Image 1 (cartoon, helix red, strand yellow):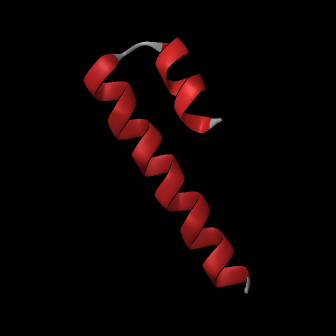
Image 2 (cartoon, helix red, strand yellow; image 1 turned 30 degrees about the horizontal axis):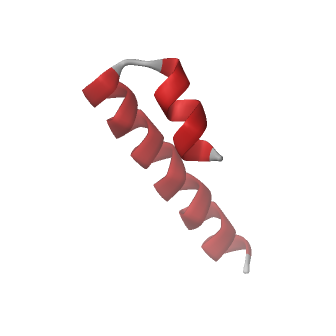
Length: 34
């Protein structure tokens, strides 16, 4: 369970990082994370 949780968090982090690189707009990232 812990490994799955870490992988999910890491996947989300990578997704957000990739999004930040594309748009570079904090507002967009906040909306996606919700």
